[in-house]
Image (cartoon, rainbow, N blue to C red; front, side):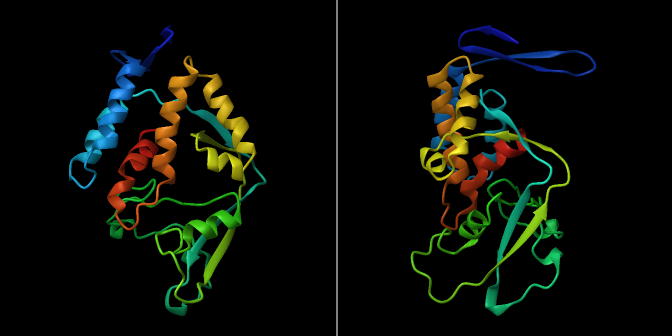
Length: 219
């Protein structure tokens, strides 16, 4: 439901009663400023982010990953190890041993990270992306290819201009995200903040993933 030009209503449906929450961009920007200045190394920061997201307008576009497409997932071969089974490069089965935050996972949560381009999966897995400026030796990376056997709905959040210049198709998706928003400029600023959180280089401090992780689990 939409009330006025800069206010949105989010309706949470429970059997009884129905709870109605009114959102506005003024509060959204206050929440974004709080998140941007938050000490993400603080233990309770993740819970605080979750509470703030519940009162934040987040423009997004629903995308569809089509049946017949392929996804690529890469894993570095550490100390000359070799992978011979799919499960070795798939998502982790030992979720209880995951102690750190990831871009979309919280401790104890296993996520299948992948890309629709093999080059992207390699780049994001490489030590160069993770903060090393120069490779000390040859880097060996194994890439797996997964077939999408049914349509998968996705939440798209696209704003970063560099990303759009690399992948031209993202430009039209970005435009659609803003088209469905009541206030183009305000939606643009909101998208910019969250897209940067998803693309940031944390340089070893995985707590800096808390905002993107909370957003992923919220949606």
